[in-house]
Length: 579
Image (cartoon, rainbow, N blue to C red; front, side, top):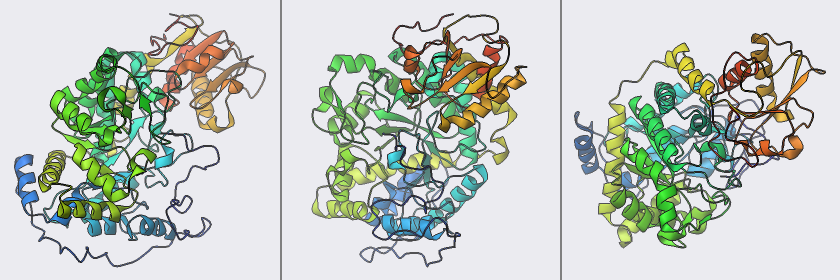
């Protein structure tokens, strides 16, 4: 999952970023959005839609069985597809979004995409330049809680018209930290590594329960989080602070806590990236990372958090596009039956929904979309995430059924698992939108932030700054800089543009050149390895740049709070904590 790079601008409209697969360019970004009106696309002529009929109430598995029995092969094929779509509304989109949807699925709107392909799910996406997963998110269809709620309501309305009456699986990657899709108006948790530094699973669970309630209120049914990878080499920046740390047993406790929080709020938790993306510096958004651990090392280092998350009730496990040599040499885990069936189902006894990592990533595009879809299903995956060509993926599944390369029993098994989970999450009462960003949620998350702050060099008591203060940061961190200025002012500091004791903020993607050797305090808002290169007399890690995290930092700098955190990864030449 590689950063999209400085040459790409963060986009909030599909008209600004059009995927390379489009043959026709979208309208220019300077045009006013215009609604794209078109009739809903007809289903493929080879298979007429089954009669929509309401599913029976009651046990989710019984409802799933009844719905599956009413589905045609085309219905079943659609249920295992989970693409993204362009546009912030289910039914009304601008010209750029319509062009994006035409290139992806031959329709104008997300609702038409659901109708045409009888989709089982849809993922909400957001592109930002400073995001290690930006390469797979070429557009943004989330803006704020109100818009997301309207979008998901519209998507569910389209899904209710499909055979079987099953709700839509609506997912997103709301990991917090550097990978966070919905940022405006929500309560922002610290990164997973921040929770790892706090080392208090009870606080983690409470914070993730708040997150789950907010996602449920917005209509999200699956969060592809937490990251259950155990972090290995410092060069692994694609995972970095997305992981809880480098200790598999501590990670296992944190993963289980996050899962309990999400699932307790009625949102399915998605563990990723199975069987573990931590012990490689390779990036599966660029190529196929090789993990060369022995089976014993994998069992000791990577397996525990996934086992713990499954035991805590995670409804989803996401596969990784990884060559785990000790488990199935040369075969990407997503396409490995040894990994996705023998290990995940047999060894871990996982009974939920297995979802592929994005199928528009290079390791999954080794084969044409239809063949890749069949291979992933045969390996044991149930849901195919973000296929690069929706029609080709669906047609490949149907061809596999007809030709015998995909057994119908395997497809029915996958759809039954998907429907069971969807009916289970739909049975929960959805919170009101007013819970999003509520004081109660801020209190729960602020407690986790306060417990995460780590001093790696400097005093452990009293104020870490005196006199006027100047806060500096690289140019793309202005939001964080302003938030810290305000937090320091609230703590009684005089903050001035220049001439004060310098607090230097650095974060994800920054290098030694971004440090200030004259800074009194250097703060790392991500994985703290860069602090090893800093000359500042005071070094602090927040692991996150959220407003609540910076509020907690300001309290420590003012001497009004302790810094109880302990770095969950080793930093060269520095202790896990100076306190």
